[in-house]
Amino acid sequence: MPSSIIPSSPGEGTPGHQARISAYLERLRTCIGQWVAEGFAPDDARFERLVLELFALQYEANPVYRFWCVSRRIDPSSLRSWREVPGLPAAAFKESPVTCLRGDGITTWFQSSGTTGQTPSRHFHDSVSLQAYEASFEPWFQHHALDRWTDSAVNLRLSWISLVPSRTNAPHSSLAYMIGRLMDRFAPSGSATAGIAGADGQWELESAVLIGALERAQAEKRPVFLLGTAFNVVHLMDALEAAGKQFRLPAGSRVMETGGYKGRSRVLTAAELAQGIRKYLGIPAHDVLTEYGMSELSSQAYSRWSDDTGAGVLQLPPWARGMVISPETGREVSDGETGLLRLIDTANVASVLCLQTEDLAVRRGRDFQLLGRRPTAEARGCSLMSV
Picture 1 (cartoon, rainbow, N blue to C red):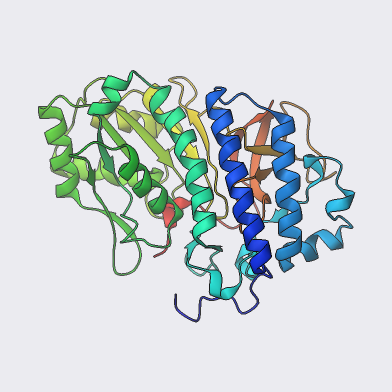
Picture 2 (spheres, rainbow, N blue to C red):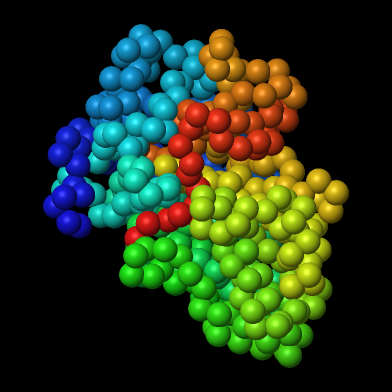
């Protein structure tokens, strides 16, 4: 890792603390396994035990988070519920090394997206925190993108096409890391990566690779699974328009889109994006899956599209929770009301488990519906990943 990236004021994790984090990871894995076996049914008591244990570990080893908690007169002994865990503003990742890791323990980092001139967030990891990341994203993705979609015989025949660069080409993109690992784990042979990161870090498509993969899949009557950001999908439509190509992909084909546009393409409404996906790929809106995630977190939320309304209510796994907070009162809003999204993620072991975002959302019971960024907030999203 370049010395300029190593935090000058890293976390305060000692060898003893790292051993406790490793023990926590094993408990987290056991709990995730229980949730999977139980069909992902919520268990508030199990979730709260994980939250309170991880909060105590992070309060001890993360000086940035501890300062934030002390300023609010909150410490592990004062907490009565997971709902009282303080949410650190996501912007803190731009300003300070928000980590429990000592400098010599950091093995990699993920860097957030943003418009030109913005300071990126950096989320530092070691082998244990990366294992927690994978333990979280794999089963929840499988549940939403594969198991709930269609029968296993169709999934085994899917031809995966990633519009996102490989994790070698974009080593500091959490999205590239996640999709790369998912393709290693689930994608059959014959799948392709059509995304690349140019010399300036901008994400592009290799049109020849993309069109070739689509033509092979259609000729072989194999359903296609396209994975990319919203602006990647616009670039895909532009590439097919320029080549004079339209496809009618086999039944079982699907799209997973994530992130926004942030100046990398023209901005489309959900209805326009769905119309383009149907026109160029023959995939209806109800076969589009939206993923919501952040480089500063380890868990993701998913929503299946509706033909009528586009992206719907986003659902986090039972080891993570979203709260919609009133900016006026600082309290959780009632069901159906709008506020700022706060995320609690028990798989976020090496930084902070509770983040206060600038994303506006509507509370929908345990889930939430995303409205977009707070008007005064900086633009962000996976579509601008730096390398």
